[in-house]
Length: 247
Image 1 (tube, rainbow, N blue to C red):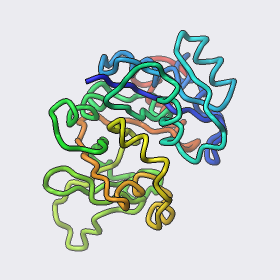
Image 2 (image 1 turned 30 degrees about the vertical axis):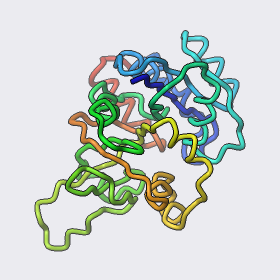
Image 3 (image 1 turned 135 degrees about the vertical axis):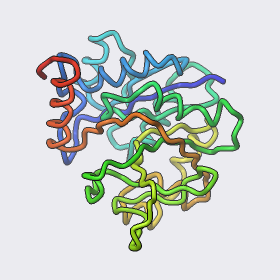
């Protein structure tokens, strides 16, 4: 199985502009994602997809590979699809490794590809982790519920399930990692936007509403996604505590 990792990285963001180029312990966020993805050894090739020359130049500056994609693309998945079409290789699976996860782990990336390597009939795969209690009401921490086979039933910015009886249920946070069969990724940009996708502002719901199956695996290690200034502060604190460096 040949696998490509695409790291979509946009400069403009409504919640935290320029986050791929923010520094954490001497390295930019996008470089940390690149380094972790390369170090995992899970992928045959890795590329950063961006619509901004500042990010493109920064990636080339640390020795990475980048491609320019159109700024008119609607979301990260469309950017991943466009980047995959620009790559010369022939791939069975293409992964979207979000450019806002500087601490993405080898375990998470391995879990992302495991269903494909094991021959499971998946259109897409993704990764979840145990939800930290303090993030239960945070809409930036997306939650996921699955069926007994690990296939995604729903994603939400609200806490799901509601659990009014206080049952001991393992709440899961969704990590923004996806892998697609190559033919599914080609099809995804042609799918029309859907009501639940627009209500939750979560593009993965478009896949579910169009009948695609998403297999989710749970990773043990946690990861800080940088979506807001508060997330960036948490990431800086993590680097200071675990790496002995000030960002």
